[in-house]
Length: 384
Image (cartoon, helix red, strand yellow):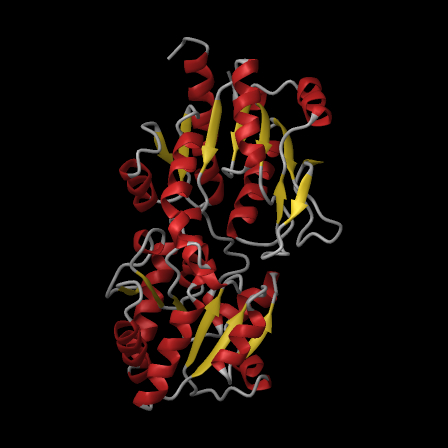
């Protein structure tokens, strides 16, 4: 079988409702397969005001709003309409990207249809729960995910550290890597713009600590703020620039006190904002890959991140940035203080990160998914 013969039914929990690393990766993947001549049908909850236009054909799954997260919707399963659409489309591979109700239903449907299933892992969902005071449910969440992933023919994780987590949690045995790429037409050191910084009230010699992500609590906003407090106690001069939007913005603005909030932006404006930082501080422990760390690296910016899944496979500690024990406020402050006091060190680490980022080519990375599809289809047909 050739890639052009693939007929892919892709199930997503949030294909284009919000703009985040996982959704951008899935949309890029669909675009890649369409360019290869494959047929793709995407099934996902939808909304009247999505964060971005979907790539490819999108079929709306029945869904319900999530009270605590109005920016998401929870799919409620596969109904007769979706089953009829699947029967008409006639996929030869099913891809599930979230262990939600529709993901479970899609696996069950594929089993009855005799089709193989590949699951991509985009985040550590169980790590979200403590941020919503639901830490006691973590063992249950892991058990539910284990049941989900062990019913799939193969798993795709975005980093080696995430592969190791999945193996430790006994999620499956056939686990490969679907990494992430970076759009170098957007993220480039040449986009640094001191005049734009000045328009925001930032002097050329101000040390700008950037935050780049969806503004949600599970990205480590509390740790970010506690670290900034520590820098103030130490008398380390700095400015904070936040690039991104999300439901925790009001909390973040009030807690930081004097941050510069750019909000959601994209394209060349996003590249300019990232390249105009002096370091990117990302204390999140919930990442499976760390797209924003890679984007900062491609922009020539040193990254100070949590030594956790995702970033630890991107940042070369002490050479292109710093990896700090999660939650270590003093450690984060030490790393940021070093960069603030030694701009040559910051520039040197930023340049090293930019070189490392050149290895992440989207087409090469997405071909690994095609190879996995073809392999599991061959195995399901008794040829492997």
